[in-house]
Image (cartoon, rainbow, N blue to C red; front, side, top):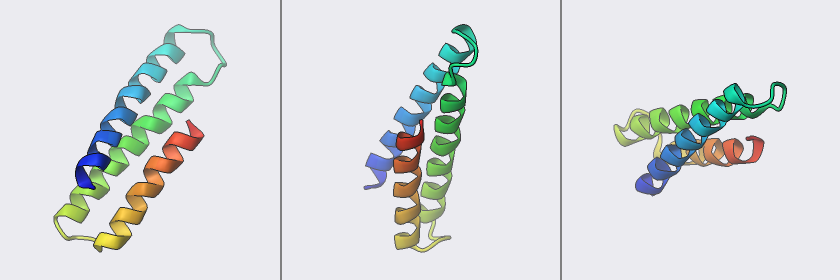
Length: 78
């Protein structure tokens, strides 16, 4: 499950960079840059929570639920 979440965080980060670049170079006011920043922040949060869960600093079930929430929330709102 950890590898899947890390892969999803990588995809979210890549999509965030693409959307931020499209927002910077495209029409102003479309909102692509906001979606890109949201994905970048959520990707960083997934990586950070994953590292905390892997080192045992947070409960495994709480960490897994939080990570899934970050991934699903980022996908829905971006």
